[in-house]
Image (spheres, rainbow, N blue to C red):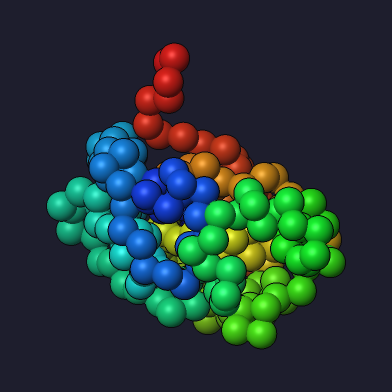
Length: 207
């Protein structure tokens, strides 16, 4: 069974470098265009089922990729983005520069990041992503050819942390997905094999 793990299209907050987390921010027009083009490129690719985060940016991305095809689309709360609590809505570039905050370690040394009281730890988001994979995705291995998961930057890396079985220190292994980037993974005989972590199905500037 192949898994297509997709990050949602661009939002206005992405463009403004604002931290989204659990905030329900919709796609920008550019984000919709990227998702629509991705869907058009995948029209001849068999997809048996789509699971997405219930947050509108991921849900709409999934619907645009679905592109009117008769593919079941379900949402799962475990696919919501990592909650950043009081940091949400703030400029993440500024947060990364603030040496008084453990957020400065978020990307470069995630093992040193301490979540705010109303936010989630890396361990928590990896745990719920892993639960989703074990309870929903893995049991479908013998009955489905290809499954798509449409979610978020940190959530998708939590899925990959589960797949790669590595520690929080290596959470960002492979880098943060760009918007509508697709990670392709094979799951067969109880084992994962990463096929491609950088697949893009839309035209990029200069191409």
